[in-house]
Length: 447
Image 1 (cartoon, rainbow, N blue to C red):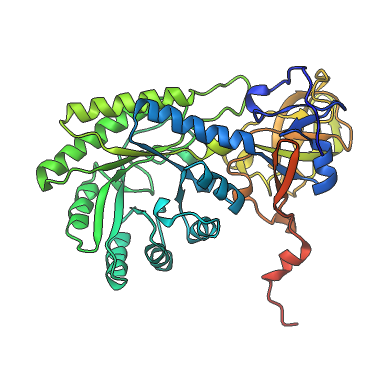
Image 2 (cartoon, rainbow, N blue to C red):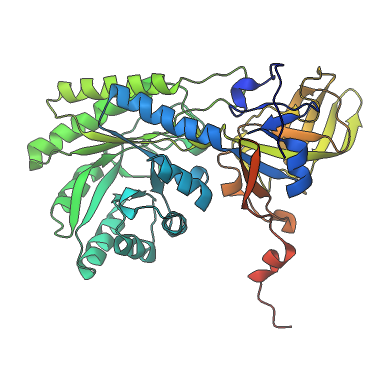
């Protein structure tokens, strides 16, 4: 399944994996693999992850942040997508993990991750999840509320541990992103709010807990952030609060997490800031805020999830039926949709696409790429100019590595697609396609 990439420049190169090319047959290739061969072997729809792009993004974020702020750890936000193969790759690249469920902890541990390299997030962690995390030796629990503080203190005491924690705080900063992925403002379900006094109360309670070891603070403004200025505003709020807690309790944190949320490019016309831009802004603003409030500079954790895995993933679909409504719209249906990618119907997310079996052909028509599921809102891409699409053509949707498979469902009793990892002309299955037997495995019927 190898292919030799040729010279013609690919359209949409900024949103495709870094290894994308054209095969001698004129098809799109990823990681040296012809996508037509991939579909022939693994079926459709299919998600393809490019190993080279994944490793490149891990290294770029580590390099750029440590260039400006040497005391930086990179922790991949597992909610974007996590499987054992990806977890093993991240471990090899020296990248830690932010996990937000017992299931994500289980995947990480099954892939051989050092539990000390896990930070456990979530706004309503169960007692069972907390017990599992403490017993496993999870490095940090990012405490989100007072119930969790109380449960964790009791669980750590019962297990004879002193659990390191960080407190998640809500700084009240609007990050100017979609409301569904904005988390740092006053009206948020996440974290102890500084403006209400709850954050100060949480610090006092954590410091008084004999089985909890408060290391520092965490905040996360939201996801897919294109603006840099909100980070600087958040640092001023956070360091002002830190100085207040120093003066009140004598507590100076050694660790701080400004979260992640770094935007990735979904559309060719909308480039985001670069990793270097984010790193320079965060390092400069944090140092200035620490100096302003006479605080030592803490070690920081950054949490890129989408920014590592987004561009590395491409969704491949097979085109089927057409519906032409003269003067209104032409629909082209594919064999996937909202069951494998909820982002368009949930956030109004926008994507590019190309016809992978003729990626260099000129656009001939404007079509809307529709999913196969029984919802009028099951639309992947509205009004995109593409070559004329025939049934059987392969439609590639770039930047599908984040928040697609992790949010996938069995709506209409559909089967979740397979995932392959490609590298240097080789493809390996890292998640098999579901079967009807999988659908029935948890169904209980005594008739």
